[in-house]
Length: 152
Image (tube, rainbow, N blue to C red; front, side, top):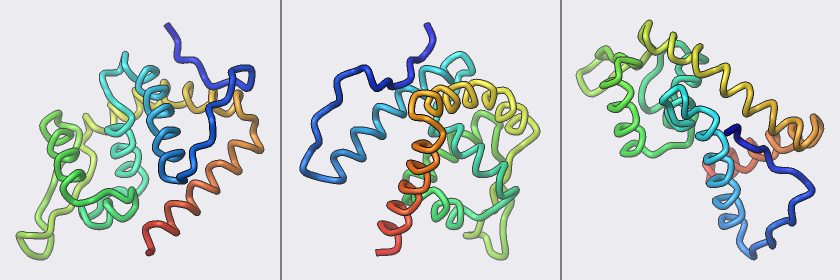
C-alpha cells in the first residue's frame, strides 16, 4: 500500500494554541508518511536524514552534524552508533581522541542512493498535495523556525 499524501479534501485538524504542539503534531504525521514510503528499504526517515546530511557535507564532526540537524549530542550519538553498526557510517579520530569525524561508507552511499528513490517519491507526493509554491514556502518557513529556535 502506497503512502498517501495529505490532501485538502480531508477535514483539517483544529489549530492548537501552542506552536510547539502544532509543529510536533505535523512532524509526527510527516514522519509516519515518509517512514511508510521508506519501509521497503529497511530505513527510517531519521536514519535517512543522517545519511543525507553526511552525503551533503562529506565528512564532519559530531558537533557540526548536531548543529546542522538541531539534534542534541545524546540523540545523535545513539543514531550514529546504529548507522555505524549497520556499516553505513565510519569514524576517524580528529585532532584529539575526543574529537571524531564521521563520513558515509561505500555501503552507506549505496544505501543512501537506494533509499533516495523512495524518498523522492514521498517528497513529490507532498509537493503535489501542497503545490509547488506552498511547498517552497513551507520549507523556507520551517528553516526560519529552526534557525530562530536554535539561536535562542
